[in-house]
Image (cartoon, rainbow over all chains, first blue to last red; front, side):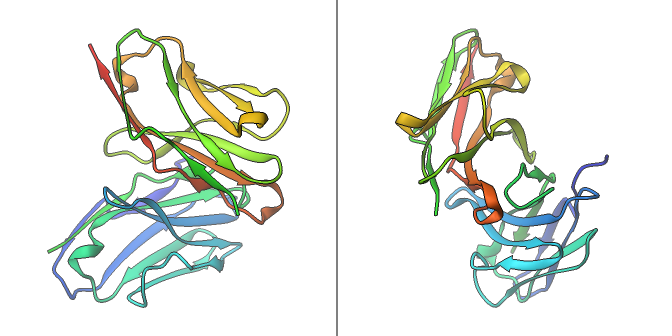
Length: 113
Length: 114
C-alpha cells in the first residue's frame, strides 16, 4: 500500500489567499484525522472523520478553517483567508477504526507570508 | 477524557548508551497506548502499541515499552541507542469502544551524541 498521501508537500502563499490541502487515506481505513504541528503548540488535532462523517471539529481554530470528506478516499482542509499564524505543518492520518493505530502522511508544510 | 504527559522535553544520550523516555497517562479504565517516532521532515511512524495482554511490548527498531498500571506509565526503552535514533518521540493514549481517539503528548526530543 502507498500509505497516506498528502499534497502538496510544500505550500507558500500570501496572506488572504485561499489554501487547500489534500489527503488520500489508506484504502479500507474508516477514520481520517487532520493535525497541525507547530513549535509553540505541538501536535494539535483539528478534526476527524469516521466513515466520511465529521465527528469532532472542536480543534478547528476558527471559521476560516473547513474540512470535507466527500468520499472514503479523499479529504480536504481549506483555509480561507489564510494568515501568517496559520504557518505550520499539517498532517493527515488514517486508521481502521477511530481508536486504532493512526498512520500518518508526510505532511504539508504551509508558509503564509 | 484521557490525557498523556511526557515530562521530558529534551533527552540527550551518548551513542551506545541505554535510553528511557517517560510517558504518564490519565484514564480510568484500561487504555490503549502508543509510541510514535518522528524523524526530521517526516510524519509520525508507529513504534509499538499496547492494547491488552503482555505488559512488555516489543516494537520496531529495537524499542520496547512496559505498561505499568500502578504507575499509570508506559515508558519507552532501548538498551543501546544509535545515532539514527535521534528524533522526536510521541506517546499517545486512547481507549476501546470508539469513545476516545488517541491523545498525543507534547513529545520528547532525543539528541544522540557520538
